[in-house]
Amino acid sequence: MNSVQEVRILAIESSCDETAAAVVVNGRDVRSNIISSQIDIHTLYGGVVPEIASRKHMERINQVIAQALDTAGMSLDDLDAVAVTYGPGLVGALLVGVAEAKAVAYAKKLPLLGVHHIEGHISANYIENKDLEPPFLCLVVSGGHTHLVQVRDYGVYEVVGRTRDDAAGEAFDKVARAIGLGYPGGPKIEKAACAGNADAIYFPRAKVGGSDYDFSFSGLKSSVLNYLNGCKMKNIPVNQADVAASFQKAVIDVLVSHAVHAMEQYGVKKFAIAGGVASNTALRSSMKAACKERDVHFYYPSPVLCTDNAAMIGTAAYYDYIAGRRDGWNLNAVPNLKLG
Ligand code: KG4
Ligand code: ZN
Image 1 (tube, helix red, strand yellow):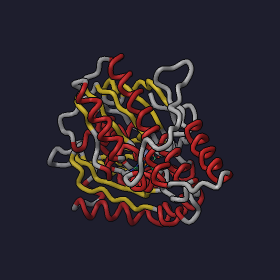
Image 2 (cartoon, rainbow, N blue to C red):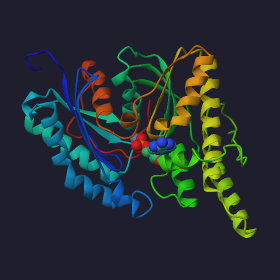
Image 3 (cartoon, rainbow, N blue to C red):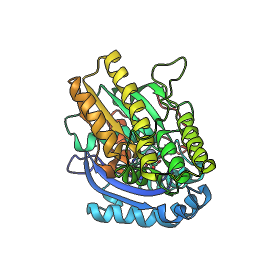
Image 4 (tube, rainbow, N blue to C red):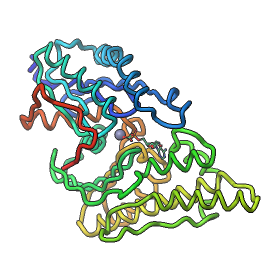
């Protein structure tokens, strides 16, 4: 450890289309959080192209790390550990971060820590909520995941519910494309929805057999596509804002009702949201109201900490570090890594 008894972690995140690096001190003190987004390139193709993502990570990662160290006012010699997302995600994209983290850790003789991407999203809540400690219930809603997770302790998770098909963010992205809003869909739908009537069209709220907490969004997506086809066949103009608002409401209703059910069944006093979709203002306010009604403390990260970033990876890694967990040089990218 350095002379000032701080744990300084360089964290790297490259699981999808953001090349990110951060320096996090003692878990919750973010000294830098650099995110190089590839959205402009992927927008041209209407979604993330895995091979382009890997190539762009390779081009940018060294510069992003240099910037993270520079902003934190540190050099590689000031670090205590290197952390990296090793799954789940796009395998080629993950590999760039994992190889880079190994190279830095090996060269500087530092411990290496592989972090689960969803654990990172959950841990984003610790950064601005200095008093938040497990246990709590967390809804992780992103482009690749929709998980309802009981956070029993640092690093100890029980997945209570998950999507059986599309993730919530994936549904936002697919519906946005169908109504001509383009990629990434979430923020565009949210914006369009502001001018629409959320009760204009009724889209179904799916129940999943065999589980009270699992989600399904592919039926909702199909229902929107059927509605759009119906309008086309009948030559009725589509009100983009009404579709966006009605779809968004259907997603939020399902997320809130499952979360509330789990809060009540598990008797939780603390509830958090995480992941890209957690930056949605309508979702945040519905969750906030539902928690308030039940006297449950509601936690949520700032939007920049909801979408992919490396600060959340550094925070998660800190709790592994102080628990003494370390990874070996055989750490590999695991595209379908399970949580818990
Ligand atoms: O967490 P994230 O950056 O990446 C993954 O791990 O997947 O989440 C990206 C997802 C995308 O599907 C994007 O459309 C969605 O989060 N998203 C939103 C909003 N901002 C991002 N969805 C709804 N409303 C938003 N404001
Ligand atoms: Zn993510």
